[in-house]
Image 1: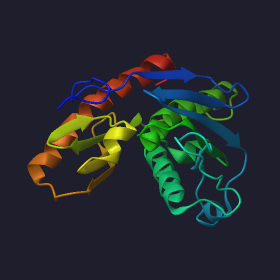
Image 2 (image 1 turned 90 degrees about the horizontal axis):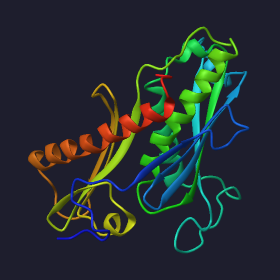
Image 3 (image 1 turned 45 degrees about the vertical axis):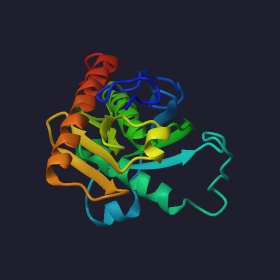
Length: 241
């Protein structure tokens, strides 16, 4: 069954990472995955949240995520009037814990890195794009801290990226666009490090349940996308890793 944009089942959409897109931030990246576009910024704050101090721990990283009202085909109201909804909270927490998996937080000292992910245009895979782009922004912010001699060394333990896979009809597909995501039988988001460790596998059967063999094939398919994303991150970060 041909895909809506003519790609093969194991082909990703064109991906572009633009580092330093927001010059006022300590770190930033515009990530474009097909027609999905997300601005990711990393801002350094010289203080810790109260709970972190109570735990006696140094360093913190947290994330916020939002979609512009016309990032989708019809206008969605801004969430700042009533606070973030359930989907937004879920995505924010996913982004935060994904990035914390590859940052040695104590090295940051009494600092917090705030990651903001703003979706300019949504065509499927916004949370995956946000995680992948945010890693570039965080790496740039960490390099800034090293260059300013605020921290002694880079605190990165590896790379983190995310990609979607799914089943549309009987086809197992990599990197779903919105049209595919909207009608998929299995929808899965995979977050992993460049060392082959998973942070999260979110796999939902929208139709019939799937078996272990299909799960393994989908994870293998996701790895194709991960390897490509890790390569692009490394290229745009120019030896920072």
